[in-house]
Structures are given as C-alpha cells and as structure tokens.
Image (tube, rainbow, N blue to C red):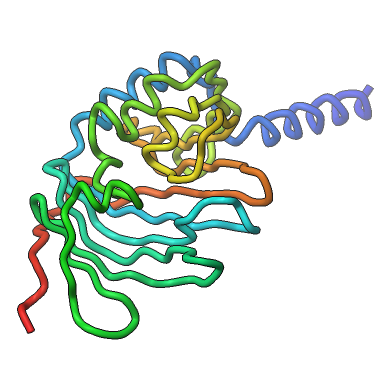
Amino acid sequence: MLRKLLLVVVLALVSACSSGGGGGELPAGPDLLKKATEAMKAVKSASFSIATEGKPKVPVKKADGRLTSAGDADGTITLEVLGSLQEITFALVGDTVHFKGPTGGFQKMTRKDLAQLYDPSLILDPSKGIAQLLGTAGDPRVEAEENGAYRVATAFSGQVLGALVPGVTQGVNGKVWVDKASSRLTKIELPLQDGTVTVSLSDYDAPVTITPPPAT
C-alpha cells in the first residue's frame, strides 16, 4: 500500500513539472493573444533584437536597436549582400535614414528607400507590426509557462510576417512568448527553411530619444 502511495505521489510530481511549472490552469490561446494585441498597441518604445540560427533565406541576419511608436529607430543591422555580410549602423529620424557601413561616414536615404530593404520601425506599428501579427495569428495554443511568460504555438500569415521579417513570403507555424504580468510579447521564434529567426523585445516604454548622428 505504501509503495502504491509513493508511486502516485511521484507520478503527480512528474506531471506537475512537465506542465511547464505554471502552478495553475493555462489561459486560452485566443484570449491571451487578444490581450497581447491590445497591450502591444499601447507600447511607446522598446528595444529589439533579431537573431538567426542556421542559414534561413532572409536578408537580415542580425539586428539590435531601439524603437519608438512614432516610427523613429536606431541600432545596427547585419545584412547579407551578394553572399557577404555587411553591418550597417543606422538612425531613422522622421523621413530620413542616416546610415553607414564598416568604413566611411554616414550617408542618407529616405524612409521609402529603406522600406525596400527593411524598416525596423514597423515593429511597433499598430497596423503592420507585432500587434497586427498577433491579431491575425491562427489557431493559438498555449503550451506552457516559462520564466514568467506563456509559450504559445500559432500560425502566422506570410503577408503580415513579411513586413517584420523580409524574405518571408509564406505562412509559418511558429511560437510566441507573452509576458504573464503585462501581456506584452517577449519573443517570437520562426522555424524557416534551413534555419530559424528569433525576434526578441524588451525595455518596454523606457525613455528613448532618437537623434541624427553628428555632422562630419
């Protein structure tokens, strides 16, 4: 009898641990993403990071920077150009993009020109960015709670996803992590052909001022 009781206790503990450690019932996927969509629409600023593993067929291989809901942004982007990687430093202020490569000084292009390559400021755009991506995600299923966030498996539209990750043209089954306390997105993981793209967001609503680089 004692052996059976111990077995039941062990099985209960294993079941609790494998459920993600949330200690409670997981929320419904559609309800969670609806809250996350509204939370992301209200974001004023954030830091972002894009990383790739393997060799996914996307031009942006790495990026780090800051964003504002007004559309300004700064940081660095590593692009694959004709088979080689080029790191670009940029500051997007208003309709002007100040950018420079590994050598030389800053040059300028318009926001419209940048959009043909990659416009990171779209990440916080309520109609084209993360909020739109979450609002159009299909069949969201909350899988577990991890480090204070819910991990959600869902399907993304290629049309919506392409605005955030250039080179993506087809739908993708990926995962998102939604912060349990704030309902804001912390990470997106996209398994693509030949590799994975991960987009991370942090430092929400921290004071951010994007300024043009000093004239040389």
